[in-house]
Image 1 (cartoon, helix red, strand yellow):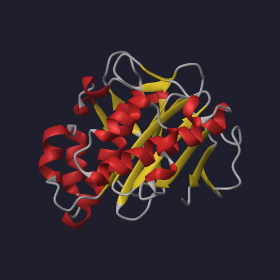
Image 2 (image 1 turned 60 degrees about the vertical axis):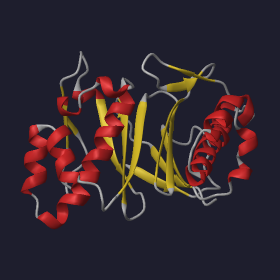
Image 3 (image 1 turned 135 degrees about the vertical axis):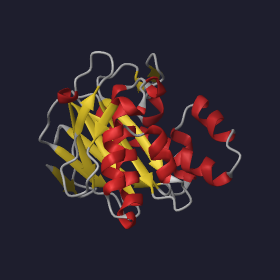
Image 4 (image 1 turned 180 degrees about the vertical axis):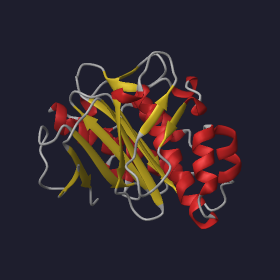
Length: 237
């Protein structure tokens, strides 16, 4: 279902959905000139320099990659926000979604499908079981706590990435209670959205995929509708 494509060989239209993985440790000076004034102001408000640098790289890479789909210069791309804050291209029909965690970012792009993407670094200090008890649905908790203790932390981040991708795909932010839908918990089963009790959305209207991100991370993609063409591209710089 997910086909890896070499960084220098992909073309827009080659697949229905693209997911780009890139490092956040690249030199931010290579991307700063691509940002608009609002993005530069946001970057300057970060307290920690490392967070500022990663923000610049993530948003610069987003502009650089989207420019290849839109055939516009990166700096000329205009973004707006939907009612709940999800960004979109103001005068283009391409859908996109950005996520970053730790040292990596993901950008998902599609021509016809609304989508959401998420990447989560495994944090040893996170109290994952306490968070799961508070936010996961009852079926998710039952499956998670039935796993051997050694497998629970990875399973937590797998579920968390999948739930975040669902929320980002729908685009309503924290208006959506995390307990109103169930995602697949087990590693040896296909990723899936099993229940969605939110407004008039149906779980069958969405497809979910586990992404081949680096060890120590989990990544998930959620796409509205069905697609059998997903390209995964690892950007080298």
